[in-house]
Length: 615
Image 1: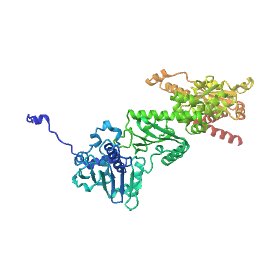
Image 2: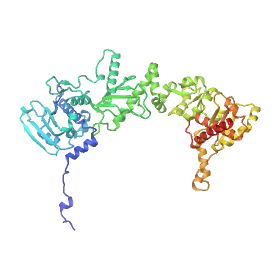
Image 3: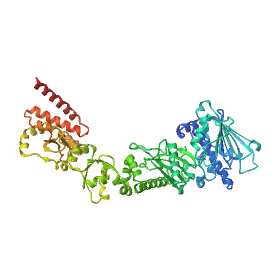
Image 4: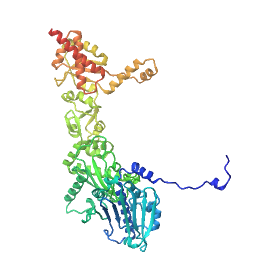
């Protein structure tokens, strides 16, 4: 089939997208907005932007000359403002065209700081709770303009008509919703009032609520933000900010940090959590934009390491996303995040310099957060490394105190290695720090940057064994047969056996091993099993001389002194296996299946031997 060669066919035919409004509203409710409750936030936001435009027309007007009034009696929800209003042409242009914003038409790119909204779809959120939206407006730009009525319906149809000026004597806009039966949860008077306070408690324009019972309207935002008020003393200000933080977050802050970034018009507080936060967990922060609550879970306002605080801030220049429930990631937000991080560092520095009691309570709760910061921040490292607590052979103590007692600081590479050697190292006078926790080993190795006289080294197995006293020659010869039997019994575990004396005497044996050595032995074993194949060649190329584990028996322990006198081969092997199993369990590392089996077997064999002896 050949198309006619016409200009119309060559150029194509312009057509208009057909918009299914119900489908679009369903899309908004499931993918853009978190809850139908946002309809009230969108109405408040539109009212605030209209008031901003009105003050632009009348800059000399008093601050409280114009306001917002809410009404809800269970049958209707109404939001009325004294803003700039709309003409009939505006209604056709902005209310009847999805996605068109009056703020964009006024070059929002240059005036973004003046308005909260930018996307022109907020009014559609009303269809989440109502099937019809009624708007009555009168423009302040054209004093003699008539009032304009717009009715939009969920099926996509709308009507517009002009009314006499007496229908709305003053400029502004009234939006009225008749809620659907299934929207009662969000449109009851008490809920509307609660939502208004939730979203608008920090708005700079007066907002009142009337529940239709005839009483005086209640103020939604009776006071300015706590950081915008004046107080008789600095102490009174601190207490007021702490009380506000407790009201918002539900905990008594360890301290409050006042935040003030004039460049972006940001003010607020950071509340230091009084208790430790689980590793990796980040709290969201409460962010307002021009007084309107944007998000209660804005994680992006602070860096990841700052999980020891929760913030409530109000900003002028941060951009909301289309849903107006989070922040747009741009250069401004990145700069704000960096600057707020500096404020937190400055607070830590002040506490370290002038309030050691506060610093101690802070580090007790949040040492992990500070350690993560100190790894990457040399200033914090210099200030706080001596104060940070570590697990050591002297108990939980600071590095500064530990380094005064031990000129050479040894650090383990894992928690299990520390637990394996702690008691014996302590008895031998060695100073060992547990480097197995996140950041600890790296930070301990940086101690000489703060205390040049200190020496830091990784704990090597031979360092510890060198501090264990050998037994005398006669005792060594007497135990030789037993040690030989023990080595044969434990050969399957690549474990050598030695006899030494060390404290505490209550420890029968010490298993000296490392995770790296175990991995190397496993790799060597796999290489032997795969010898000749492709994987055998690869593993063989990687193979190193695998260090053997060492089971060091303590001659000072009564159990060991009895064991080394055993001359019955099977019983000697069983006792060696039992001592190995006990030492492995005391190291608190995960047991391999073969080790678990050995422990069970040695216990049963000892029990069987005891029963045979009794019989």
